Image 1 (cartoon, rainbow, N blue to C red):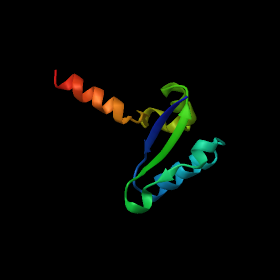
Image 2: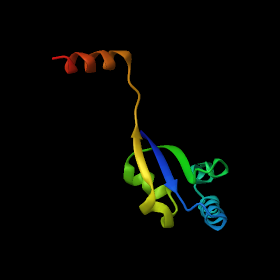
Image 3: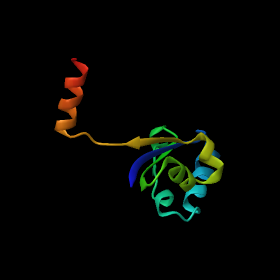
Image 4: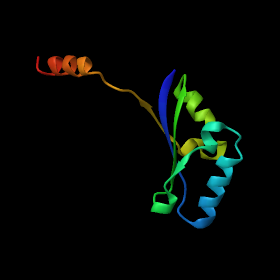
Length: 92
């Protein structure tokens, strides 16, 4: 499985915040109901990190009304060996 960061924006007014939170909480998905929110800090997004097979599968987790606005980023980690190989390739 791959790991993806899902970022879902919504408008900053109170009604939009509560509508987004309600949509996520009632979606029934474990991922969505456990989203992290930035609203209290003035950053009106929900974030989730999910382990699924594809970006399409990640997008399908999001409540339909927010899917087109969502940003989905594939995540990876680098080993020290990979970093060394990258640096070697760059210096050629």
